[in-house]
Length: 390
Image 1 (tube, helix red, strand yellow):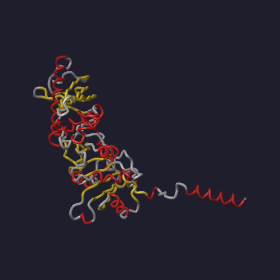
Image 2 (image 1 turned 90 degrees about the horizontal axis):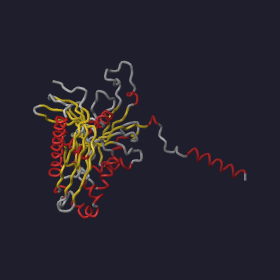
Image 3 (image 1 turned 60 degrees about the horizontal axis):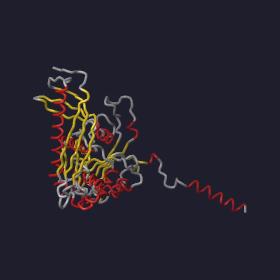
Image 4 (image 1 turned 180 degrees about the horizontal axis):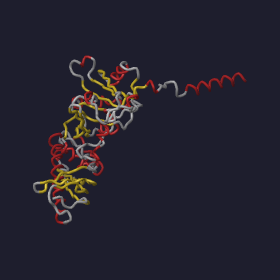
């Protein structure tokens, strides 16, 4: 009996010792990946595989500031290195990267995935993201952006005020709170939802100019995850306003021969759908803006109710001009519903939506044929502490 108890005791000790430790990897053996870039291989590279995967690894020692560092705060030792490999699958490319470094790639801290324009136009977005969605280490909050050129080249940027390029990209992408021309950050979990629901969507764009990068504009994808085209800064501002996501930003309003800067401080959006004629659906997008006068070049009496009413009216007209330009792009050129008007029909007119959803962007193209009217009401709440500047 005592022998049996002793055997059970040994078995219990072994079980406790093995639980949770059999696949443990020491932290110093991990290669922490903070960014990824995915490109289509060119003809010469295609012999090894159709995709080029680039990982940005952190060098922990380079993140520590030391005495004698440069004025911009960066360490004299580089804080990252990039590795690329070609393969026909992302999983295969990741395994190849493991052969190039002594530390195995660890994706739990992956902050951003960059997809090149060329790859986005191929319609392979869902395929290349599959491995990241399946990986249990991945964070669903990982951001996704589209690069105008090669993604791997963007990852080689050396920012002036950040040690890691990816951290600079991420910080810049969070500036929609200051600029309505930047499309809000979109994470991989959101993109997966769009893919599963077969919905069109937009992603932020990052561009490289020499050794500088900028984040502005929006990349539009159809419901087959194929890139249809880019919106410029003004068109992206119109998209953010139409979607009700432009909670901040600036609208430059022409008054006589000068301009005023209307600073958006609040935006409320509501949508009404008229489906009395299913062949010609009508939408009315109501926009209520609140804002401040951030700057004026014209001599204006900002205490005059009449003058303020005139400025508000001109602001409304400018918002209508900007948003109508965006609508023309969405309906006539790219033909993608990134305003989620189809979702609005599904919620409020479900039976009708079920009958037309397959022809919303293809076939009969109800989205391109529907009438969309924008109604704007703009209010000026604060004019600043200076009433006259001239």
